[in-house]
Image 1 (cartoon, chains in turn brown, purple):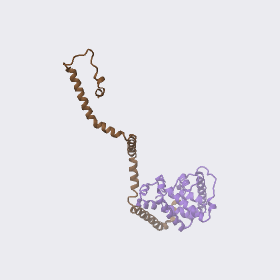
Image 2 (cartoon, rainbow over the protein chains, first blue to last red; image 1 turned 180 degrees about the vertical axis):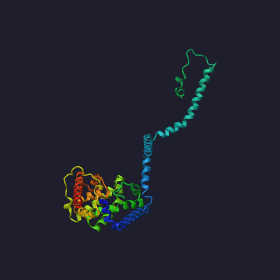
Image 3 (spheres, one colour; image 1 turned 45 degrees about the vertical axis):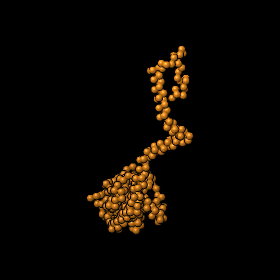
Image 4 (cartoon, helix red, strand yellow; image 1 turned 90 degrees about the vertical axis):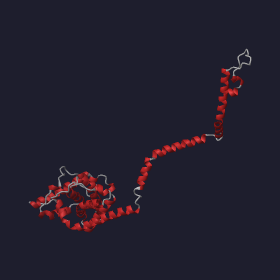
Length: 139
Length: 184
């Protein structure tokens, strides 16, 4: 007794060599196709994928850097062209002003510690120095 | 003795990776059942060999379209089935393909082991098989050769499940009738 499968396979067993030949040809074509693809451009198949992965992994970094550069560019545009030299000169003058102010403070301190004896005291209280020399007082 | 094709582990994953040896094993596993399926539908040796070859080439080219590796067998038979339909169309036998039967009664889910055929009945079995309309023959061959489920046969043949059930039921009933007559 046989199953239908056994009967069917048994009846066509003779064609196996032809099927083997077909199979070998298809597998050989598969190997040739794969080899040809690999040899034609060994990097091309791997490169796009790796490049894409690299770009994707750095997308947030690139976006952040772009934003920073954009802000920097906007800030530099907002500055007026005349402002820069003034600022530079002010920065250059600041040590001199600092020295002048220091000398003035020292003189005021001396006046407070040792009042001049030769000068008669006026009835009125002396006017504030800020009222006499507004420019130096401000300094 | 291997009576029905078992659900073995197939090297589909290795074939996906382009392993030629895996392809060799896969195609060797299916070459004869596939050929039997095709020749019993087409009845032309050269056309059947061409269909098997085209099926193999298509499988190699389009394996990426296979989603479930365990369905490799039914997927491969599905490709071959489409090739058979093209062959039938070439032979102007569309009328037979249009045959549709009513839904089958319940109880058509027997296994291929239900039918055991004596040696002297083999000729009659093959004769009757070839007398069946191609749609019924296709369903019966898929059932016998690979023990595909009804769902898998429906997928291979591209027909509704109910139609597959009815075709299998009527085909097996016809075979049983023949075998009973022969034995009595």
